[in-house]
Image (cartoon, rainbow, N blue to C red; front, side, top):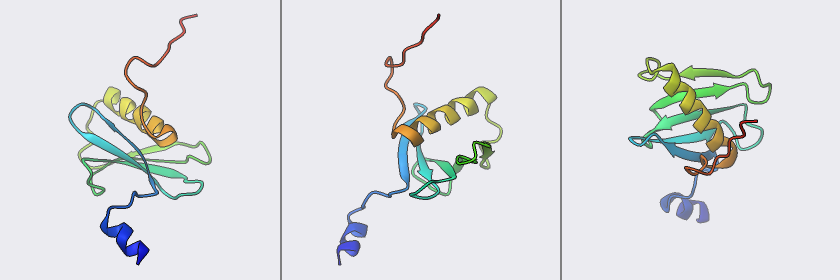
Length: 106
């Protein structure tokens, strides 16, 4: 009964690690498993079928990004930004707030 109630009330997905936005779309980062995930996927607009990128090799650090249909033609700069934001969301739950990142120039 409790599981049934949780499902009806939209219990949070334990695999969802965080979200980020590019100002136009919202992206969700989802781990492959709850314990020691070897990959994560990023999907757009709340639609898990619209896979933007899957990053695998997390446990071995032999990282590989596989881009989804419709996202392969994006610029290298945008793809790099998405991967950076996805890693931040995967490990921290969210990207850093604007203006809260410090840079040391020497």
